[in-house]
Image (cartoon, rainbow, N blue to C red; front, side, top):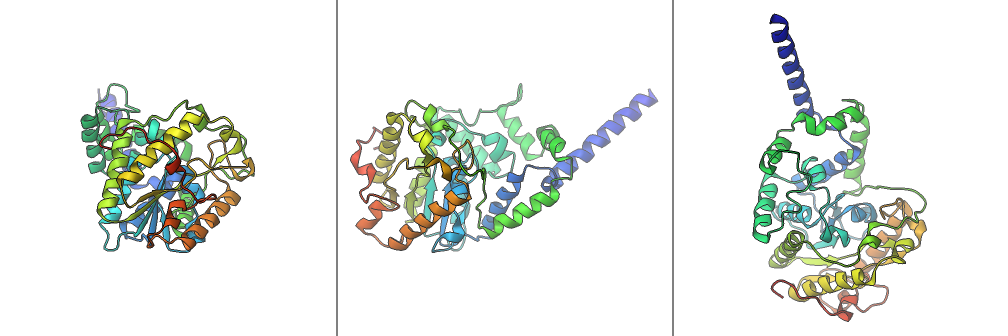
Length: 358
C-alpha cells in the first residue's frame, strides 16, 4: 500500500511538473509556426499596426512582404486563417489608439467552404481569445452551423470542456509537440523565428522550393458554396470595417498554372459572384479584378500553393505598385481595377448570387 501511495504521488507530481512546463514554456517545444503567431500577437498587443494590415490565410502570410510595400504594413494572416481569425485580429486592432486606414483581406475559396484547423491551430496556439470561442459558439447556434465549432472534437469530451482544457494547457493536448520537440530543443529555433517575424512585420514563409506543379485543393472543388458560419463571420468582418469607415480591399493570391488548368469554372464564377455581392453592399469594400490569378509553377514553393521567396517578392512588388498608383485614401475609378492587370473589375462582369440580406 505504501508503494502504491508513493507511486501515485510520484505520478501526480510528474504530471504537475509537465503541466507547468507546457503552460510556461511553449517556445521550448511548440512547432515553429507558433513563434510566428506569437510575433503577430506581440505586435497586436503593443498596437504596432502601421497604416495597413493584412488579414487572411497562409497564402497571404507567405506571399505578402510588408517590407516591400510603400507604406507601413503589418501582415496578420495566419496558416489556416478564416474570417473568424480575421475578425478576432480586427477587433483587437480597432481597440488601438490609431487603427489602420487600410485593410487587405486575402482568403482562398476553400477557407469559405470548409472548416480548417480552428482548434488544432488557432486555439491550441493561443491566437484566439476565450471571448472569441464563446462568440463562435453563439454564432454557431444562431446560424445553425456548428461545422467549425464542433470540428476536431475530442472523443467523449463536450466542446465547452474542450475549450477549457485548451485554456488551461492540459498536457495531453500538447504531447505530440513535446515528443517531437524534445521538451527544450526547439527553443533557439523558435526564438530566431520570433525575431525574424517581428523584423518582417508578420511575414513568414511556408514552402521555399524553386517551383511546384502540384494541383492544390482549389481544383478539387466542384462549386463554391460558403459555409453559413464562415459567411456570417465574413459579413460581420466587412460590416465592422464599413462602420468604422476603413477602406478594405480583397486580394486573391495566385494559384499555379497546374491548378488553374484543373479548377472548375463554377468555383471561379461562384467566388466572384459572392464577393461582388458584398462589394455592392459595403461602400468601403473593393475586390481586385482577378478572383483567381494564375502564375507559372516556378513561383510556388510547395504543394499547398504558397509562393516561394521569388514569387512573394514578385507579388509584393506588384501590390506595392498598385498601392502607389491608387493609394487607399483616394476615391476614384482607379481603385475599381486595384491590383488588376486588365483594369476593369472582374466582379462587375458576373451575376451575383442571392445572399442573405442582399
